[in-house]
Image (tube, rainbow, N blue to C red; front, side, top):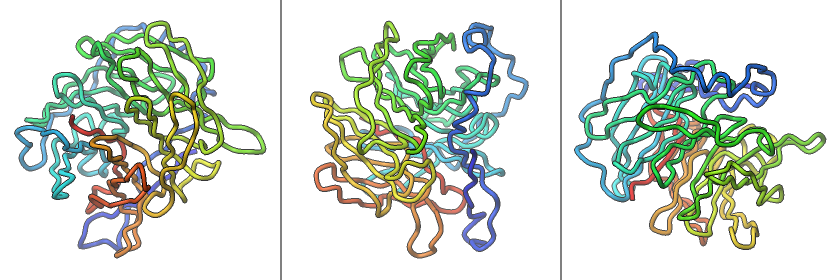
Length: 350
């Protein structure tokens, strides 16, 4: 079921709203689509019928520096989607790229940084690369027509892109766009986000499974990056509808909801110990309404939540939030503004 978020048109007309397109995962779509996944992915790259010109908003940053946050926002029907740079110390942000493929191929859901410092974005229906110095966009692969939308992306140690496509994890060559199915079926029902384990050749995926009489139950699934073998490593407990995942050593952090539905209300960040698989709630409620993207750097968690409420306007302006993983204390780094009120995918420059 798609939901639509009310979005502000601009600061001067904040009481006039347009129906917004922040679609959440369409959980029934993949199960009702009978087109074979392998047949679609082994066809040649689709002809791009529309070639939107790359644009930048203002002046692109000359360089990304360690600690900078880059995140996606679905923007609006006029400007399309955004990729933004945020300085966590000053709170200053700058649009690195907007529109173009970001607006034409659905909404930008996930973001990662490759080994060359380029930004990789998973739109609903395409993968693209963005040069952070110029804002220029390069289409890696057009995924229109595939059975599932693209919701997550991670970079494997060898440079391949791992992509979550609802019912499968895909391996994509970042230069050629050649795509293979790494793993599908098995435990997968709604796979929304991925993280690559450090130095162990494993991919960790969040999965949501609907259980009659209960609702959505979250799962963390480990996938061998060579064979595609799936292993269920943690299920239920504090894990309900899961949206984002980040890994640092043996520490796994996931974002999701306190309740067993997929709506917004009370968000939650949960820690899972990869050695014992013990779960512990790090932080919930407060600014967390439906947190999506999550990253970890300098012993600090950073989360993107498109539904965080602005206490001054009482609008769902969204926010980028820092969370102390020990105390759970939340600090808003930046709130949404104007037509940038849907922060979603998030990564930190290392």
